[in-house]
Amino acid sequence: MLTVTFKADDGTTISTQSVGYNDFATQPANTPTSISYTKRAGLYSPLVPAEGAACSFVGWRKSDGSAWDISSDRITSNITLTARYTILNLITAVPLNNVAAAVTYINANQNAAYFLLIGEDTTCEPQNMNGASVQLTIEGVNSERRISLDGTGSLFTVGPASGSNTTIELTLGNNITLLGHGSGSGNSGRLVVVQNKAQLFMQSGSIISQNQMTPMEGTYPSGGGGVLVDNATFTMNGGTIENNISMDSGGGVVVRNNGTFSMYTGAAIRNNTANTTQAPYAGGGGVRVDSATFAMMGGDISYNRLMGNVNSSDIGGGGVYVSGTGSFTMHDGTISGNISDKDGGGVYLYNSASFTMSGGVIYGLNETETFLRNTAENSDSAALYKYIDATAKYGNDAPIPTPYSITINGIP
Image (cartoon, rainbow, N blue to C red; front, top):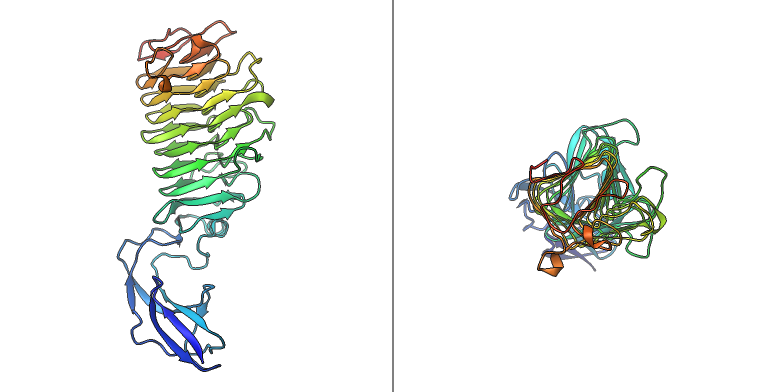
């Protein structure tokens, strides 16, 4: 005799049956005809069902996920069958926890909003999210779930390769971590690229981490170990970008080409490194802004480092580096504990770049708590350095002198 084990959707055993070879099993009398929905892995559209929503019994599935028809499939070996239920908005064509399959489906089925819930750690090769008018939110189920880069390149490229599309959106939600190639294992891409008017959002509980990016393109500036924002929008409502390395600019984030980056309370960019040994005219251990816009409404940029090509005349910015026609507006938040091997431990401004500070704190050497101090090899520029033909260097703590269109605390 062979054993058939029937299990409920939650994995508990309903019953077992002894069945002869090539015979049929029978439906257990105590099979639940419906269950209440609890958050689980899958691709959903347009919404994830509400907790407690009714799900009706529709049959059985084998351990590989394929359906089992109890009235026509014969028993030829010991087998475990698990109850299947209709789950509102679940797209059954996409295997659970398969990020690549989900992105492929989304690109082919456009003009919709999707939620991808990940129930276990997984790997994924680089993905291009370029379907028209699609919005994807990725969340982990119950606890932190990691999506690790398999191969080289960018784990997610959001937006078309050319043209523009403002309706392509990726949101990294709670309990989701994107992991790249760590220190010593170079990668030819940032972990996330958002381009050509697409949009990226990070929410509380999301993390972008452990990517080491090597120089890989002719477009200036290169870099962005964690995120590249290229003529696109990045809104960091929360979450953390940490432990990334760029062998160029922007260990954490590069914003360029009229891109926009907004950072809010609860967001953190920390422990990232820009190593400029192979890239002169570079900077920004945490963030590099080049002919783009960065607005800091809150959050924390801390313990990032700019290191490497200290003989170049215009590198720096342990925390933030702003160049070209870039602008950095600081309304609130904290820039602390960053290190520059050249100038501008906290912030470095190059030539026509602008900086307006109406709130928040940039710590200098006069701070009594040493762990909060931004530091620079040029100690006169621990908090802020403004480069204009190497003539302007300011200082350790606010108020900082305000020529060259720098505005501090609303004073021109």
